[in-house]
Image (cartoon, rainbow, N blue to C red; front, side, top):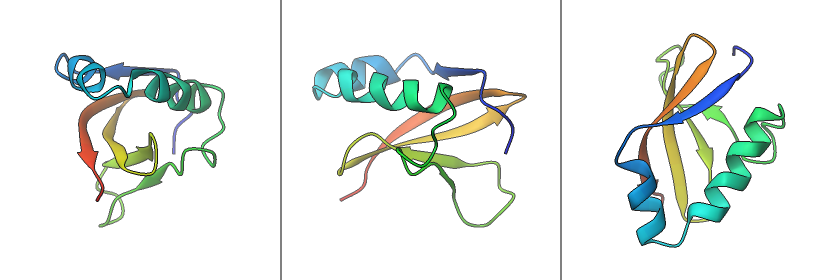
Amino acid sequence: MPRITAVIEKKHILPYLEARGLKDQYIKAKNYLLAGDTKSVFFKELEPQHSNTWYFRINKQFRAICFFDGNDLIVAKIDNHQ
């Protein structure tokens, strides 16, 4: 796993988060990732391994699905885990 230098959202992510009241929780999770604290947000690679698809926890219900572009983490989708 490369060191994360930036977390970049696709254009539809922030309106989705705002509509569900998740923006503050998302920003907190994003700051943990940028600080290198991946355990706090359960940052893991999705199966199958080496698929370059990762996720991190925003709260108990929502996960951010993302992928690496160099050292940048691109958030492509927010998933309702339940």
